[in-house]
Length: 404
Image (cartoon, rainbow, N blue to C red; front, side, top):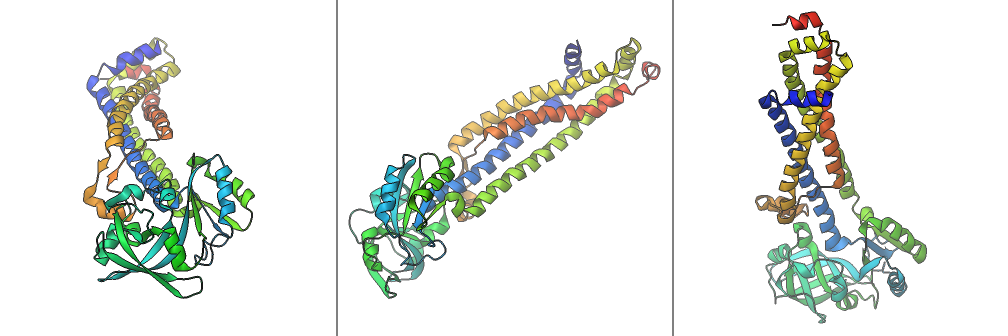
């Protein structure tokens, strides 16, 4: 009975009810777009870092991360490799030689990070092979080198040109070698493109004088959400001579930003909710004042205050449910196509690439966000109706009936 009365009362003034519905729908769409865009940016920053060079897990000699010098290579990389091969949760891995040095051309020079890789292994771990925009990926030749587009511009070089790499050797001397540029890559991070270069691991091992040794294993797991448990297993198997880090350990600031983003989205939802509450209060108060005589008659025929109160709250709740369902459909119809095509922000590409995001943002709606929004909006509508309903039950029947 109360539900039926509430439903009829909603459509007695269609314009007012539509205003409440539109405000709920627009609020929900705004939450979806804001949440999807922000979540997409954070996820792109994280996965771009993982796919460039961080991977899901890295293994080094104990102390390497604090002191990245040439002599801190893995004490027994073959043992590490056998452990990884036996682990069913490891999807792929790549052995790397690491060194900081200088890359020089005939025109300029620049500080770089020189990664010595086994091309076939690295192709399974990072996106460098798929990021080549000129030339080709590394082959079996020892004297090929891959450099970023930004670094190529700084050095004034192109595919086919020669460059000289220099770095400290195991003995403390300066080792150097000449390489020919076989490919130029462009990633979503302009900062990475300025400093990273890739050569064949054998060539870098010879240049550094470290023999058949490697500094790092970069590992991709089958489920990146399980990296902590995989790390614990690897640490138990490898012992104290090695250090095992997950992407969460190596990107603490980015993980903190993602946690901070979740808190900021909660605050944004509260702000939108407060704005809607005041709008609903205003609309429902107008509805109450227009129906004072009607409420007086209902109270005169002994309608209980609790039933009258529930009727007004039900009106807002029904509007909240309808607005939420409509907003949910509209929000998904907007977000799903954008999640596939992305939002092209190339006008801000320089700034976005400096943060490692990329010029195209792909919104991502989380299941938690959808559930929270669907529960949040009807609650906001009900809260907005509490005060108008309270004003209605405080009316005196005689005064209400004679109200003009």
